[in-house]
Amino acid sequence: MSAAVENQRTVEIELVNGHGGVDPRKWEDLFLPTPLKLENRLRAQKIEARLSKLMLCGSTLRRVGEVFEKEIEAGLRQQPSSLQMENTYVPELPDGTEEGSFLALDLGGTNFRVLFLELKAGQLLREKVKHYHINDALRLGPGEDLFNFLADCVQDFLVSQSMEKETFSLGFTFSFPMRQHSISSGELITWTKSFNCGGMDGVDVAALLQRCLSARSLDVTVRVLLNDTTGTLVAGAHIDRNVGIGVILGTGSNGCYMERASRVLHWERPHSAVHDVCIDIEWGAFGDNGCLDFLRTEFDDEVDAKSLLVASFTFEKYIGGKYLGDLLTFTLSALARDGLFPADPNFRKLQTSHVSLFEEESCAGEVSRTLSALREACNSDLLSTADALVAQYVAHVISNRAAQLVSVCISTLLKRMDRPYVAVAVDGSVFKHHPRIAKLMNKYIALLAPAHQFSLMIAEDGSGKGSALTAAIAARMATRGVARL
Ligand code: BGC
Image (tube, rainbow, N blue to C red; front, side, top):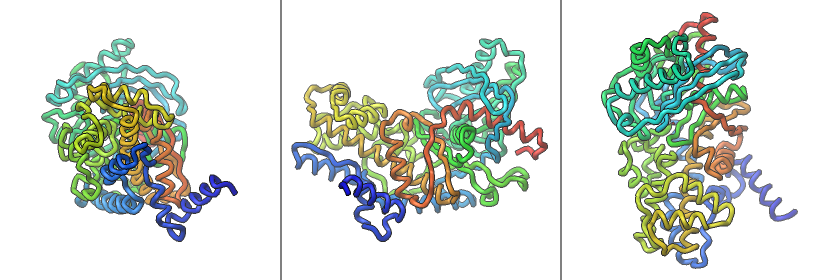
């Protein structure tokens, strides 16, 4: 038997047994990032040692999983927890009968989208979309201004399509943590990512949007209010009925899953006929109560200190695309301070797209684009090929940790759902553009939940298509006479 085949067999055995009975050290080794290979071995060793806190071993990840499970339970029971575990009031997934024309709004990033979607027998027949830029003043100013702007965009969109006189149901994808009172109402809990509008305390975002739309005499009714993870789950389930988990790995990060309704305490609507319901976990805030402090590194402290919303969304700052570029910068700066890297990158010159680029070149065994990006970011010509390899290594270490942490969440959900097979619908720029992340996640989920069958699938445009599908599901339930959730 060749060494490669022998290795593969060993991994398979370990995947089935966890580390039980095989060789715990080998199991632990499977979590390590690829070692740094430099001609200067001493420098490589010092760098590896300096970054060791960013390298999580299997047992630490298991501990994270245990904490996650405890926080899930506490959140569902409405006990103190860093996880919101919000009831989305979405109790059904697409079944191929979704019909009608809908508007969908997608708010969460610096671009806001208005969409028109026409569905027939569950299939998308027609789609129109327009993007609108949300500037800093709107993202950081009064909430009323933002929502008036959203309504202006809807009006502009409808006029551009000569549809301003028509009647529409609308699905509002609002990708921030909410306290939902029904499938079509909810309050913002806190802003995240690059938004921080004032005056939104206790305001129902769907009602506010409705008011702004009605003030423009538009015959548009907000029928569903949902998070982008819910949209992703719904869009994924439209393709594969086995989808039970939705994940966003983009600027921000979050997950949702189908939970048994009987395990959920927060219900503000009659729900005796509901068997399962989609729960928006809001895992970006995991650890905000200190339960993950054992993971935190000095580099994370710096990322947090320089973020818009300090001391919140701890977990998102370890994995979200908004932060991986800063993590790369601060880690390289720390190496520079210790004389292990020749220059200090200027703040915000390295983005998450650089993390992907460095990883892509590292996979291809190249350095040229890494080197020119570094020279520009550091404003220095002194960087060498070895330095580019160091930056690629840092990108790899932080990508590996991000993949591991998302995998812990997904593997914990797989165990909790305990179904024979679950497809996980994933969307987001990091998942789509990072060259290694999907592969790493497949590996780590299998290592952490060896007895559970799963697959990761890309479910694009949950915020648009998923939103329209959810509005169609709500309409379908209403025609069946199901009590309005
Ligand atoms: C928000 C979530 C959202 C995620 C992905 C986070 O910052 O709190 O609601 O699902 O970003 O967009």
